[in-house]
Length: 273
Image (cartoon, rainbow, N blue to C red):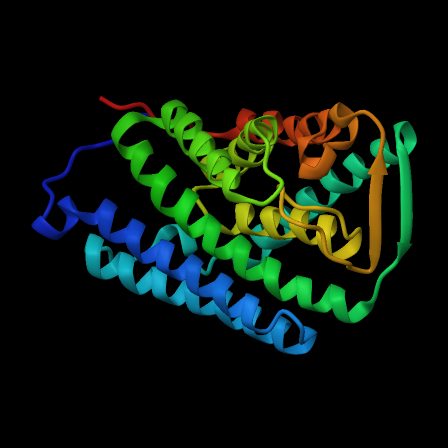
């Protein structure tokens, strides 16, 4: 399927930097709010959900103003809940499978956490999932796809997504490359298959929440925090992910490649004329 060319307005010609700056500000603001209330789970949950909703509203408004779009189709109300639900099932299922394999083939030390901590993580991961998907899939991938086609957009946006995790405290080069494949590529393909951000948002949220809010494992090189449980894996780093967390394990790669291939089969890839 080829992308039709249209005459652009002056504002549309600079839409990429404007949308990039706008969504980066949303991401930084959401993380700043989360840091401020990190010790108060109920407030952290409430502000996280509010930040996620506010980011969606701001992205919609900015897209309409900058791109002169009547409808922001990637955030259409139709299919919102089914997209979020299906994404949540895929994300939670993929991480549960990852942890099941890790528990079977490594040494897992599991201790109890708290419901309050889990509640706070839910709000935090909601804001992270929404703001990162708006930035990486809603802006970077979508606009790259229009200019270069689906394959290049998936590859480049996934690599950028992975490399941004190098700033995390326990980041490793292998971990960021693993995130680029299992997270970046899976989420980019989820968007490509649906032309909607709801599926990748649901998937992103459920993966991170199950990892941190349920199992209390380290996430993408960031320090782990207690959730319902506190899980520490011991064994070969290729199986545990080391200090980067389970996302740097071969199990995570395997469990994310399966849904990625499944979604790719139904994706309608676009080419640049």
